[in-house]
Image (cartoon, rainbow, N blue to C red):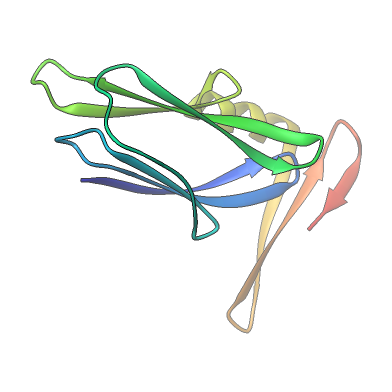
Length: 121
């Protein structure tokens, strides 16, 4: 079972996304903020999932592709709006400056949009 948790930025908001994939059957689950948003039985290689992340007119599509490696094991490929996850994060870091603020065990993130000169929590 592959189980990964990501803290994904979408514009100035952040979403905790958990991806689970059964390596034998390719059955998959996507949880956003601890709520199951998607579940699908395995359909073999190259099956994809598009899941909108965000609010109203500020959304990005999370795409999960299941493929097999040379040993026949399922592998997980994530992309957001057509960009590989690593490229998306790098592009985000070029536009936004973020701070993690922690007080009395509570955590918040602030994001500064350098193009629009706006800060939000």
